[in-house]
View 1: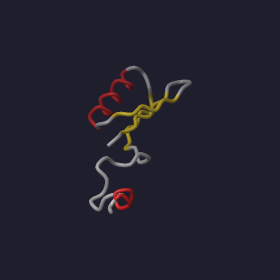
View 2: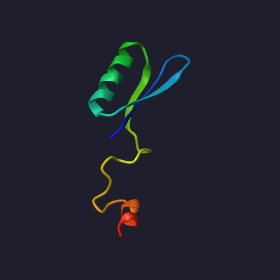
View 3: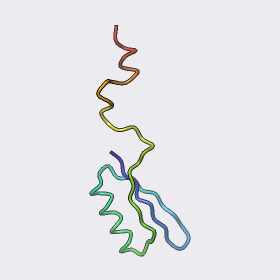
View 4: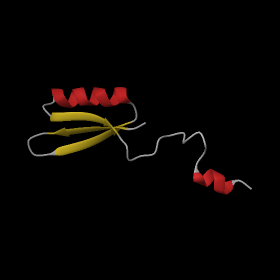
Length: 65
């Protein structure tokens, strides 16, 4: 699962990505220590989850003879 770290400083806004929640939380703490504010961690809902669903994907069904 991918996590987004959003933060602002006086003139900029950044969005960083991390593959684990622990890594995202660590980076968020680092940004706060560096003076960034409005630091937020959220789950990236735009990327499909790894592993797919239990029923398989539509492309899996299309490949079945």
